[in-house]
Image 1 (cartoon, rainbow over the protein chains, first blue to last red):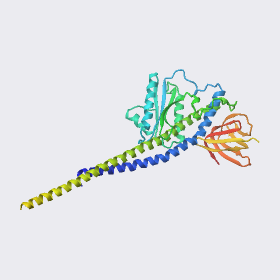
Image 2 (image 1 turned 90 degrees about the horizontal axis):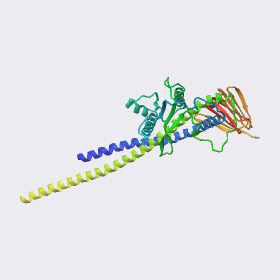
Image 3 (image 1 turned 180 degrees about the vertical axis):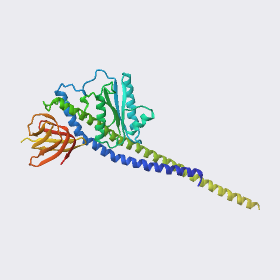
Length: 302
Length: 86
C-alpha cells in the first residue's frame, strides 16, 4: 500500500472514531433534554404559586421590606453566573460569560463595584485563567440541578444582600443564565434579582385580575419575611433548571454538527483514498506494461 | 356543595391536586381547618401533617414543611419546599 493511501486510511479511521463519540453524546443529550424539560415543567406549579403569593402580598400591603426597597446608593453589585460543568456544548458557556462581562462593564461604568458568584466548572475555569476573584463558586451537578444547591446559592446571595456595604455586602444582585427557548434557541439573559421587582415572574397575573383581600397569618410582615426567601430560591432554581435544559440542547446541537462534519470528512477522505488507490493501480499497470514492452523490445533486438 | 380545589406542590414537583371537602393543615399559629367558602388567607406552614378529606370521605395525608398556604376562591394551595404523601 502506498504512503498516500495509508495516510488517508488513517484519517478516515480517526474521523470514524470521533463520529462514534459525537453521535453517542448527541443521543445522550437528546434523551436528557426531555428529562430536563420535564423538570422545568414540574417546578412550574411551585414557582407560579410562590410568585402569585408574593404579588398578592405586595399588592395588599405597603410594607417596606429590606428585600424590596431600593437602596439609596448602589455601590456594589453581585453577578451570579450560571454556566455548565462540561464543555462540548457549543457557545453555551461562553455566551453567558460574554453577557456577564458586558453587564459587569455596564455596572462599572455606573460606578459600581462588581463581585461574582459562579455556578459551573466552566465559569470557575474562565475566572481562574484570568486570575479574577469570585466570592463563591459552586461546581458539579449543573446538568441535574438540585433544589438544595439553589437554596445554598439563595442563602449566600441574600445573606450578602443583607450585609452592609462596609462589611462587604452588596446592594444589588443580577442573575446571568441561559434561558431555554426551544431545542434550537437558547438565549443568555440578565435578570435583576434583588432588590425585588415582582412583576417579571414566570407567569405574571393577567392585567384584569384582581387579588382577593387576604387574611395574613400570623401577620403581613412575618408572611413576607417567610415568603421572599422562598421566592428568591424558586427564581434561582428555575434559572438552574432552564440552564440545564439549555445545556443539553446546546450540546445536542453542537454534537449533531460535529457528527455531520465527521461524516463529510469521511466522505471526502474516502473519495481521495479511492482516487489514490486507483492512481496507484494505474501506475502499477503502466509500469508492468512499460516493463513488458521494454522486455519484448529487447527480445526483438536479439 | 362547593368543593375545594387543592394543590399541594413541592419545589421540584406537584405532589397532589384534586377536589376535596376539607383541608386540615398546620400553620405556625396552630392547626387550621379549611372548608369551602373560607376567606382568602395566606399563612406560613409549620412542620406537620396536611390532611385532605376527599368528597367520598377518604383522607389523604401528606407531610409538608417549610412553606406556606394560600386560600382564595375555594382554591387551596399548599406550597412547601419538602412535601410528600404519606
